Amino acid sequence: MAKPLLRIQRYFCRKPVRFFSLILLYLTAGSLVFLHSGFVGDSGPGARGGRDSVVASEAGGRASSSDTRGLGIMSRVFKETRRSGRRFGPRWMRKSGQGGYKMAGRGGDYTSSWNRALKGRNAKDVEDGRAKYIGCYVDDTQKRALRGVSFFDYKKMTVFRCQDNCAERGYMYAGLEFGAECFCGHKIQAPNASESECNMECKGERSNTCGGANRLSIYRLELSQESARRYGSAIFKGCFHRPDNVTAALPFSAVIQNMSVDKCVDMCTEREKSLAALAGEQCYCGFPTPLFSLHELEDEEMCLYRCPGEEFESCGNDKFFVVYQTQVQDNRCMDRHFLSARTKHLVALASFPGAGNTWARHLIELATGFYTGSYYFDGSLYNKGFKGERDHWRSGRTICIKTHESGKKEIEAFDSSILMIRNPYKALMAEFNRKYGGHIGFASQAHWRGKEWPEFVKNYAPWWASHTLDWLTYGKNVHVVHFEELKRDLFSHLKAMVQFLGLKVSEDRLLCVEGQKDGNFKRSGLRKLEYDPYTADMRVNIDELIRTVDAALKKRNMSGVPAEYMPR
Picture 1 (cartoon, one colour):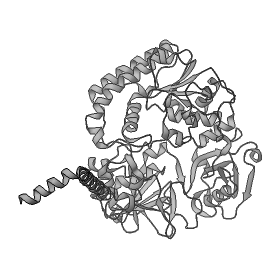
Picture 2: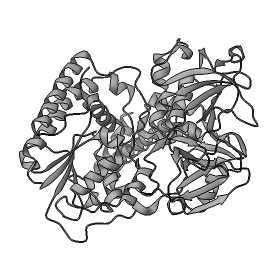
Picture 3: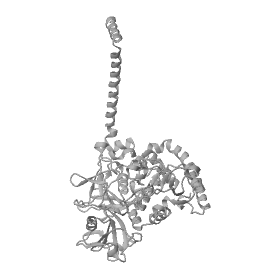
Picture 4: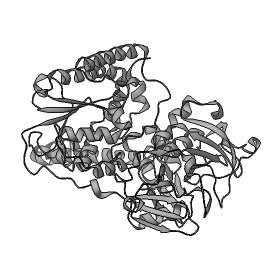
């Protein structure tokens, strides 16, 4: 044994390079094994969504690993339940197979937390502001009771999963059938059935009922009142009085035999108009203009006249129009460019993080036609079209500059400012979601229930107040905009912002903005926690901060914070 060892020793003494070569080969082999195990791990159950689930591949950071595993088990197939020849589907749908549809990009099961919280409780007894059970209805495969999108999950369907998926897409009703099928719609187009006929347990929640054989358990989605009501690919805008000069307001029209919503929407889409207005057998197409601004809604009962070609649809009449927004993009506000001449007057678009700064930038760019800049650089925002993101904030080529900075020196660098303020309870949660889930993602349940959330509130809540107070104290010319008021009355508040920026207001551009106000950075408001994340102590502190900010605004002869901020 000694002789072979002696020979090896002499070999490496004579050839030390070979010794180090063997060490290098050993380390390389170990690295390759490590990398291989990493790739194998990524393709395991926790990552099956990339191939097995349509939704999980798109969820990204929005879902926790446990959520992704759950979604990987069963892909969710969506399909348009209106006539198969429908040519214009929602943007988040794409054709798949024989006329069916698969979800493309907006998936994500946001209701897993609801299911845990409400486990063992009958969904018919739960009215928490999300949905209200309204009864059992007849369903027919040839003429569906709910005619929006649908999806099936024969292993894990629950009432709350169906409700959330329909509500996220703006539908007013969600219905469940056969224990595993979910249908969405903006109105019920079938008669009632006996409650005893909705007798099938949900596949993923046996304590609840999910319809029956050709019978739907239907819920009205209260949260969808904040969202768009859809009809196939079109968005229902409401009932409106006939404009005084209808040919100028809606220049394209035609008489359609056996009129239906589908036929009018299709005609206006083919003419590349964003509005379809039904008036009996007459269909009008056009864009929102000062002559027909869609700002004066009428009672929907004024438009309840049956369509000749569809029994359950309303087609309006000569005096009251039923209006839908088609999938055609209104391009009147899409052109954007840098200022033609550099300006030395720097305007800040200031806000606490989570107060809607990115959304405000989107609105300002569309309303003015000029890019906005940023005190920072965010590559994801640049890639989404905010081209001013790359410019130095002092370049003078942008109409205003996003900033979250506070403090005397930073604020005095600007000549004037638009100060965005949002309810701190909403702003803190929005920023926490952004911090742990990205611009339109969500923090996981582990983050909400862990130590991160209390620590975040402790550090960020005082900043919400100090940020506003600093800008009110050191800002040279401050125009205050409350997020909630901008959302409620976008036209007038955005108009005031454009005027503050020293630009001429184009009402056509503002009306165009209203039709595409959400942009690419609207986080769905429908992924609700099953509990209030704020403790009593947190609320005491935040309420005191709200009162402080309210007093500071009033001291400067400004309106105080909106009523919903104030503690009750």
